[in-house]
Image (tube, rainbow, N blue to C red):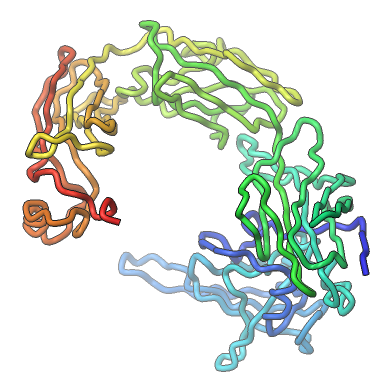
Length: 480
């Protein structure tokens, strides 16, 4: 039996399932697996919520979980009661219930307390996020009698001031499904969901038709997956099993360029973000920091009118030796250029030239073990003993594979320079001096450092040597 239906499915577990907030989940279960594993599957409406409180040592009250009273609207499995009670314990993995919410529950019964609950990484979610699951559940028992491949196509954007928000479902998009020697097609429905029943067991690649102006932000899979070819991930269908592939799309717009200082040299480690023309205070999740060549790239930008903001906090530092600035290189917001981003905008070479900046000096040297061998991939920092208001006196970098480092520090600062590493017992093999240092610090230190060097930054400095108090030894991970 082979049936191709123009219907649609998506759970967006990592985006929309409140039960999984702040939790790290591994393999995402399919709707088939969640249905089979749950004690009951039903749609429920939150009627009343009681939040348990506890008083901490500081006198404040803290939430210790919820007791939520649910009215059962429709049962798909194992629920004959009109009302049930859910209980949470207050962990970061718990769902958070509010009166009036409608949920699709894959629920489990606690016989000792006669209450119900959901697991952190199942498919329980608000009803508006469950169109894929509902198609399967409403088709029972027929939908469980064969294979099912499904997925969703949704448009989300990171909008300044709004955060990551759902824009629309992608309706009528063609989905190409390729199996072993055969190809199939399906189309997304009004909810952006597609589903296909009756495919022979096997491996399938699934490719969506992407609307003009959008791009895949990230895909999501549920079920058994073949990752042997990362560029062509395949879903594995077994007899009467489910698998799904869904995609979150975002605008395919970008702005790229370089940032130059007042002296004409590129500025690495400068952070930029977007602000809408009228809401400068709203922080954007569209941001980047310049690389060693001063290059930046702001991407997945929704259509709109924007300002590029540099050093939004305004604190002058060694990496950002200037106050808040705007494209193309001004300190006054009313002089900034407003960039109009339209569909498929690709703005290249939008360079920014900072008009003035604080003087800086360059510190160069090498980080070594006590026997003179270089320390690769560890840290060097300068920390000022005091700074003026509005300034930041700390800067750090990592050493290259020869232990060399370069730090650019604000002129006039007084402070200390040192090398350090984050480490632990057993990090080095047969290294008694290293073990002795850790033992002297109770077996654990947040970081292990070199002797500090006191400096006043008045000139460029070269050939600085910073040494750890133990010789080179093989790292434990090099032994593997």
